[in-house]
Amino acid sequence: MENHQKKKLLFRYFSGHTTPLEDSVIESWMSDPEFREYFFEILEDWERAHPQFVPDQTKALERLELSFFHSRSSVHRMKREDKKTSKSYFWVWKSVAGVLLIGLLVFFLKETLIYKTYHADYGDTRTVHLADGSVVNLNANSTLRVSRWMKWRSVREVWVTGEAYFSVKSTSDQRYFLVHTPQLNVEVLGTKFNIKDRYKSAKVVLQEGKVRVRCNEEDKGIALLENTGEVAELTSEYDKMVTRLEDPSFHTVWKDKKLKFEEAYLRAVLESIREYYGVNIISSDTALLQRKFSGTLPNDNLEIILKSLKSIYNSEFTPEVAQASGRQSE
Image (cartoon, rainbow, N blue to C red; front, side):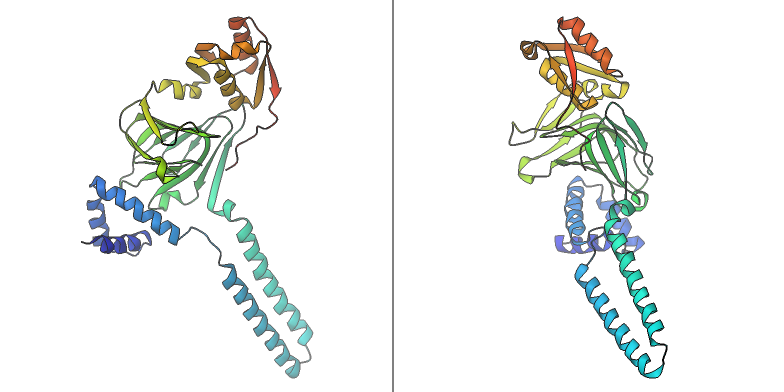
C-alpha cells in the first residue's frame, strides 16, 4: 500500500473511524520498527490538524450574532402581537448571556477541564500513580501534567517540567507512552528511565527497556537508548544531542533522599542543592567552588547537608533565598 494510502488510513484510525479489520491490519504493521517511526510522524501531523481543544472564536461570534439577530426579530414580532414583550425580551437576553458565560468559562478553564497537574514543592518529592498503571516520581521543584482521558486515548501523553523518574507499564494493546518536556520528546512502550529538563539542559537516563529521544528542535538530533545507563543529553554547550554511558544510580538516588556526585565541581554540588531547596548556598571561601567533590550527601535536611559540607571543607556555607528561583512553570 502506498504511503499516502497508509496516511489516509491512519488519519481515520486516529479519529476512531476504522473498522476492527483495519485496526488489526494497523496492529500487525506496528511490529515493524520502520512503520512505528512512520506511525508517529503521521500522528504528529494528525495532532496538528486535530488539536484537543481549540475554540473557534470566529464561528462562536457568528453564532452569537445570529442568535442575537433572531432574538431581536422574535422580540419585535412579539411586540406587535403581545404586550408582554419586555418580559420575553428579558428572558431571551438572559439565555444568550448564559450561553456566552458558559462558553467563556470553558475557554478559560480548559486547562483544568482537560488536564490534571501535579506539583512537587521545594524540598519535597511526590509519587503519582497514573490511570494506566504507570508510576511517576517527581523530584522537588517539578511539575507533571496529565490528560484526564489518558486511559482511553490511543497514545498516552504527559508533560514534565523539572525532573521525574518514570516506571511505564506496558499495555495489552501496546499503546505508546510519550513524555514531553520544554526541550525533548521521549517515546516508550514499557520501561524505566529518569528525565531532567531544567533551564538550558535536558537529560534522559535509561535504567530498563528502550526509549527514543527527540529534540523539539529537529536539527538537534534523535537518540535511541537501548542499554542500561545510556544517556542522551542536550545542553547549551552543544549544537546536537550527545549520548554516552553512565552509572544510572547517580541520576536516580534522589528518590532515596540522597545526592550523589563523582568528581563534580563544588559549584555544581551547590547548584543541585539550590534546585532542590530553592535557596542559594553562599561559601565563605569562593576558591572552594573550583574544587571537586565525590561522595553521597543526605538530602532530607538542608541543615545537615550544610554541616556535612562544613565538616569536609572546614568552611562556612550559608543559605540565602534564591532571588530568581521558583517553581518551574509549565
